[in-house]
Image (cartoon, rainbow, N blue to C red; front, side):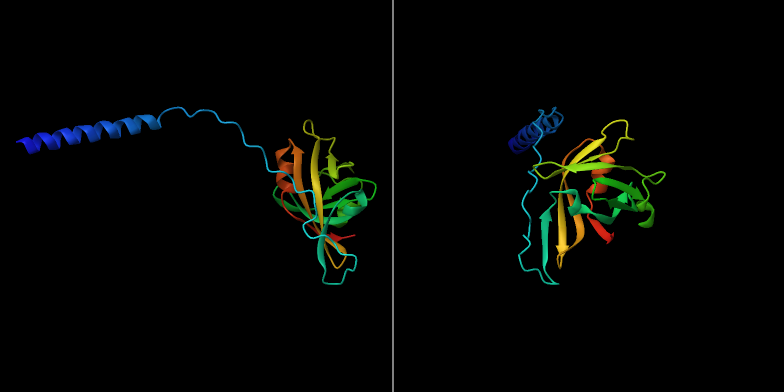
Length: 175
């Protein structure tokens, strides 16, 4: 009989301990401070050498609009599109590479941009009611001394669709 009582007592203790653990899971979590985003790398990953060959792969941080000139394949709203950067800092998005040679393409954004002394590229789309500008660090990937891709590292942008679109590598498709 004492074994049954001992077993019952042990069972009751285990049940109480288990219940306490279950009830503790429903406790409201303490708010924690939001982690700061990691710093944006500001140095080239593979610095371009003085002597560039056809097979040299390197990158630069864009410091002027001319570093980004060309037509680039880009995602726009999750769909493939094209983006032309001009030497004067203007840009045009379109549904074909050829369409981006116009000042604007219906249904696609266009705007202006500039690069500040810290190498941060600021793009401006005045057609947006809010969050007109976004700030990015632009890394130009080069092969054989020619730009082939752009990677845009987010510095600050409150427009989530632009963040998403620029989160993918832009591939150069033309002058």
